[in-house]
Image (cartoon, one colour):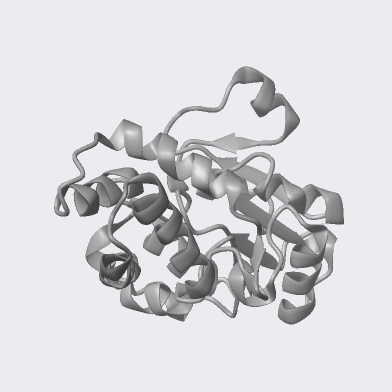
Length: 235
């Protein structure tokens, strides 16, 4: 069945932080006299992420309100930063992750999106991200490609929840069998398979194992994704 719509994850699929989020947080800590490596910050951040519930007073994960609780946990409770300094570091980080300079758009992304748009494909985003996703897509000059942007913080549900994929399909107006989703996370993005969509894992970092590639197609970047799509966009 010919494809009519393609959906993309954002983080580590269309773009990625440069430097990494762990380095950015470590830098913010170092500027305030808390000297720890990016690897140590990575452990602190992952623990905080696991400990904080998905909903805080109605605010969903990655929303600005949830993010403030996340930063408070890391910098105040874990690193001992005075409470009066938390607001400043929170706004600093919120702004940093809204700036296009923080991100690197993967090679070939814009070219492929341009080609798909020219072929009449409907394009969308399904991402576990904060409420500033549309702003970031606009600032990285990606927003114009997409007919639909589904953001977990706004919808208050996240991949791999099938309801998020159903919502995306409903808003773009395409049945599951005519839609494909691509992303970097086998479990989260692979949730597309549960609703009858096709799924292609995009593995920019070359981390997918042989057992993963047997479950669904794996491509190393947007050139390989184009090759994979060529046979699906005719007929």
